[in-house]
Image (cartoon, rainbow, N blue to C red; front, side, top):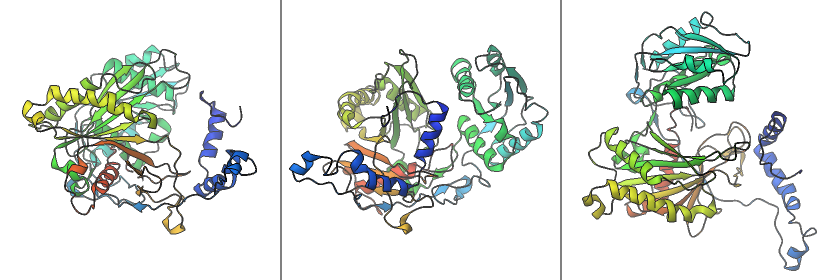
Length: 468
């Protein structure tokens, strides 16, 4: 029906129309809200007799709230070289990775599908050679690739694909004939689930252009899969993380997409830092009951991450603080996180931490719910406060006016939206045993400033991209 949400998978034409509408300019959306919004939801006095009887009127204007722009952290590469960050992003060319890995053995596989044979070993020889140089330019000690292979398949389910993905090499570069989600998923399933082979996919039409920036971005994926660290932010931007006593944990549950089988399970995931550099985030995955948001086996997943803190992170003791970012929880489920998941986390810690630590009340917990599916949008009131796309400048933080007066929450728009209206992330603190118990260090004036600045700085540590 017109005007209603669609919960089914959109066809290509519908998707194209949706994207065309979603990328409207911010001021167009703001105008639609103020001009058409009250009538659409029935809030005009002439359309709503009940409101008129009670003397209630809804002003059509957007409310104005105070915000501030947090400065971007100092992004560092090899030998403390500082990246030139502008508009929340930077160019990867000419930088060497902070901790580059060794790549003694690797190869590549060129896939053609459906009769298309646009790329082959001969035509990509110079492209592969240039990419090998790109690996070395960013600091990865990469040997020359072993001779690659070609495979022609009829469909992503062709058994020939799995036979060719079997290899004794440490890492396999896979050249796809086109951007095909089904084929990409099949390659990743075979490599990650069935064979345990590290694969990195590139689209042939982009790869063959031999663009330096494109190649540099692919090297980021290589280095992360090999255990390296791409970029850091300066230790002055990381607050308590820099003390090497705080583990950062991310928790999320992915549910079956529209059109999936009725018995398709949900997938729970936990990632956690292993040191103060925040460059590697080993993950633990579990399948669980479909559509269940709360993580069923959270205790064992947390215990496994704490074990890696000592082994991979080479720490003699366990972290004193656990800073947890919990994604995908609706406002009505906040209490369930405290009542259901927090006891599982405490149980894991009780089984792992020595008695001496538990007597001290360790570890301390802070749990932050991260929300992205909300309807709050910010529009700059002055042109000078807008970025190139008309959105608020990246780093915009709002923690008053539209936040809970009796609770602790805030919004941060760390990124610069390329088009459309930027959606800020909403952070809601349901438990804090860390920040409000500590003495606030300059330049912060209170615990809220410290957590907001730390959260914003960590947005620049996504190792696969050169942007917040």
